Length: 491
Image 1: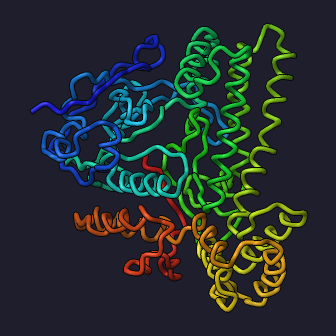
Image 2: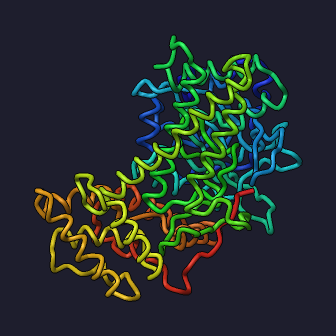
Image 3: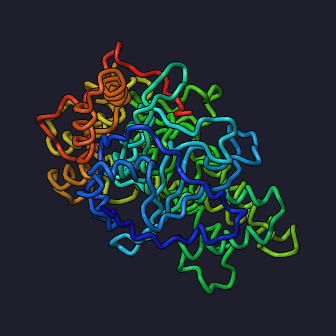
């Protein structure tokens, strides 16, 4: 049986310095856990064939599909502010690229497929828990409408990996617009390889920013394009309470997608200083710090691109600073526009920003659940008698004081209550991948080989904005003894 992947590879056609050619390491007994059938169809793949034993072998890296040109990509990166000149794909192999049904070039990568020249003494494998976490959260982010890498499949390998203990091994098949990162540029910048930086920039422009081809200053425009996409992406993270957890430059995608779901999490109670990642000991990547860190990462990208800006360094720095200076305004406009939609405002007026900030301050002071407060606010917009939102506040009077001002503000707009509620429900999800639910799914799979909870959670999260009465419990925040206080990196 031949399983066809319509590969049209471009990154592996770049010079050898950009990657190492390496095949996945075969595994003992691959078994398919989950195939994302709609995504397979979107990629031009046959889901029925992928669900066969032969398909599981491909998705686990045991065999290669025809046309694959497997590589591990080279990159560097700042990890928690400390520069590492060589990182690279230490446990991932890019099989190749396909053109999907929308004409978009997409990488197909195996994560957890064995050691590569960039593994740095690691085993190159992935444990089942982190694979399930990335599948769940990345697909939830897609359903929420946030640019993200996707999960095509999860496979158990029939082998164990050793972390703190022996754990079931697994492989995730990840799909991305590309896996090019800020750290990819840093890899060549630290080596002072200007030709490689130019080749990489030209590749990125052709692949992700084709509208810039032929422009007078394409590399300036490239930096501006990445700045805009990252600013808007992080704004969208904040609007759903998402915390990436490890915003290193090697986890910052040039395409503007969310990438590398390690110790990521969604907030329950609103807290701007919230940190879940067990390795973020200083709170560098806390919820409210994410815009600042994104700009820091983009500044590192700008440093890499300076040689392409011109021979006069002072002028190049000034031009880069001007481009970076647009970030705060782009982020603020995207974030504030999103917040207005979340509270049901169709127009922008003086005082709106302060009104919304007062709500956020009251939520933080009263440990109000981020997701439920905004969703229930939509109910209050549709029915003035609905008061579920106030129950999220330890001191309901704090909500009442704010709600009086809010009702006066929305009364100044012409939309009906029903129109406002519909619009709010379209941006305020009912369901997010709550940490305690994700952990319960992982434990059922790891301890009992039970994937029914995983299947049900994925099903619920595929429709995050819809009321699903049969699964209403998935909207509930954790009980005190269910709270997940730390999340962990898969390595």
